[in-house]
Image (cartoon, rainbow, N blue to C red; front, top):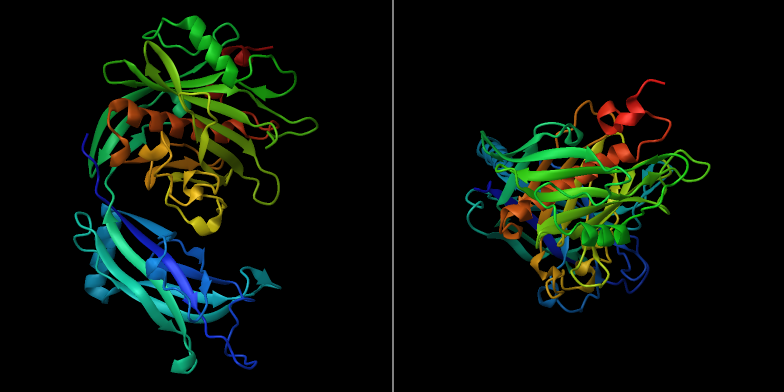
Length: 447
């Protein structure tokens, strides 16, 4: 499998030095009482917001501090060609950053932050698919005050090659589609998916190619999920198996905890989520690799809440790698990125995902030193998720080259993307009817 070229443009190591006024003045802000943040914009990409730490005017320079990520932009070959082409005809390409003092948000429709200044960093992205490039690393003077009282803003802007394998489902996961690897205009089939229902007598979700270890498989599967029959509204028993082109199963996603409507409600609640187990073959049986929980958020967003954690081989608790919310109606992107925006504290807007504060990166080392999770660093994977309003969902999956050493590695991420996509339907309000492919055969029989 050959990867596609990608470039990761990152903004990090932010800091702000604001001079302290010797006497009250409107033009000077006291850093101890005014939180700061910035808005980061790259042409045609969504705006990103990050908190900016304040340092004393005579404090330690940010150059000697631990690098922290504030924002990142993932550029495909198509994105690069567009940005480089525009810079050729319209002049230099710039990364634009606006720095604000005051709290984020709005009051009576008016932004509560006060603009301190703006910074533009010129970018030359040509050749960054093969070599790293630092566009800026150091302090910049911002603000309109006198030069002796101007604020100082520190940032690091760099681009690095980040090649990825790109996969595309050829149809809805529940329709047992093929999965293609995409490289430019070339589409090559690499996997097939088989969607099925587990019955009460076959909860071990085993493939014909893995007939042994039935009793042991049933044992650990029941420890992850719920074997009991639950009264009331529920969706259960879904599973999807990923096969390579020879027909051998290489990964699976199995619904191990039913998606059940909470009492007196029509939705799956956060307090009682449904869950999937992502499985990989090993020693003649399925072994757990990760666990995905999903539920329906309340409130204005009415989104799909989820949490994904790796399942260790030992009895140790799993480590959460992604936890966020997607728009139930519009969908978004599921992302595992262990160098994501640390300023967000694991909270992101609907339609995207960042690694939470309780993930390995929350320890300050971005998960690099936590075995067995040290193999996962930086960008890991992303998957597009269509919402309920979409007529057809064909998930696109990107996986970092550094996290794929064999076919089973790639297949596990494909199975995870299928599970998050199917969770949109599993978490539909129970007043809404599912499409026929998601209903067990007995539910389709005429009365």
